[in-house]
Length: 109
Image (cartoon, rainbow, N blue to C red; front, side, top):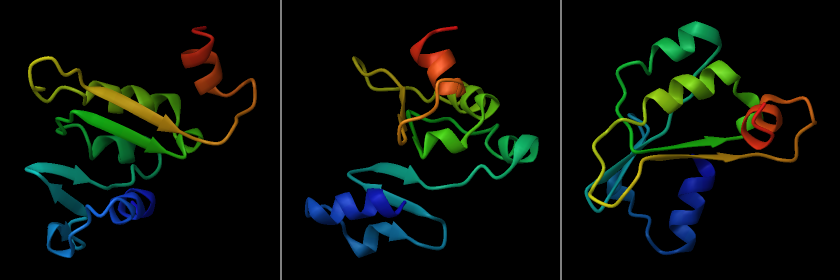
């Protein structure tokens, strides 16, 4: 959340009145950004099962499991505007050759 809010401030887009700190949400031009942590294991994934999202950003993606990724990918099901595709962004520092991001997403194994 900190990086997102820093970018919003840098580009002059941040408005305090749009930031609901209690709910960890931010509204911009009619769009909602939700900030949340999955927590650990199945219990963490359980809390997002009803989510319908257009975009998912995994900050520090190497801290997520393959199962977390798959569950979040399934949540990319909110109707998108015509010509727009729902998508996921993963950001992380370089990873080792055995990490699931390298094996599954880059190598496709």
